[in-house]
Amino acid sequence: MARVKPLAELIEGCIGPAFAAQGFASTDILAAWPDIVGERLARFSRPARIEWPRRRRSSAEAADSGTLVVQVESVFAIELQHLAPVVIERINAHYGWACINRIVMKQDRILRAGRAPRAAATDPARRGEVASAVARIEDPSLRDALDRLGIAVVTER
Image 1 (tube, rainbow, N blue to C red):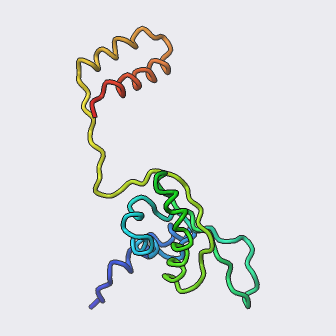
Image 2 (cartoon, rainbow, N blue to C red; image 1 turned 135 degrees about the vertical axis):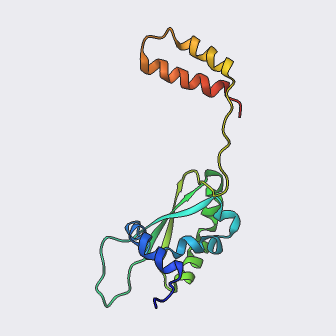
Image 3 (cartoon, rainbow, N blue to C red; image 1 turned 180 degrees about the vertical axis):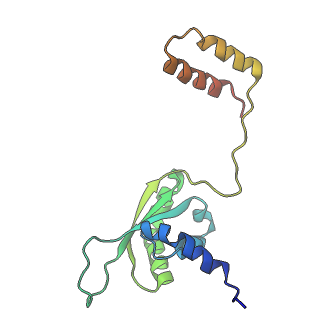
């Protein structure tokens, strides 16, 4: 009878190569991110990749530390910048060796699970007004762009 495998073993085999391409040795930093930086900051940031130095020292010497690239919402970039030494210390403690010596922040929107964007409601009469207003424009790309702008303006959020 085959042994029942934990889901973690199966997932690691499937997505491990994708994470390795981004510099992650394993997927555990993503799972441990809330424990490393705290729940509040984890909601607005996530590790994107680890950049390792190009040159490798001789095998007798210790491995070089890498740079962690973190995607962070713009409002929380300053907070992460102030906490960077603590975050580096916690990551290194998590792995058990000084694998990270620097954090680089990339400001970006972080999509959070469980928070789907609401569908916008557009009044059909207002949609018709926009369509009639841009119908006289001859250039199709300009007409489409103005149509999208008009819909964005009249859409109720």
